[in-house]
Image (cartoon, rainbow, N blue to C red):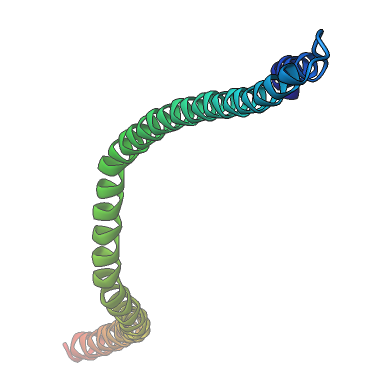
Length: 170
């Protein structure tokens, strides 16, 4: 930055030096040189002001160019973000819907699970009682069969004895 400004600063300084060192030595020339010196200083000041103004305009243009690019990039990023949110939105809604349905089914499952456990317990108790009664019935049936068989045997024996007694009477 200073390299460009240094060349411009040297040029007016040289003018001032030329004015301070006039080629003639008369007094009128010295007054003229004084006026020329102040004119030269004024022109140096104006040149520096113009240089500062040009530099200021260059910087301003660069800043505005950067701001324009930043705005474009910001718009592009906002568009990309909006696209990403748009892509994620349908799945998010579907996921949320499925989660709600899962929660609802889970709430329905809890009482059903409790009822199932209760009924399984009741079933086991009833099954156990049923099995016990079935065993008892089987034992009673077996005992009945034994008794009936024994009774039949005894009656048959009695009948045979009676039959013998009747046969012996004749």
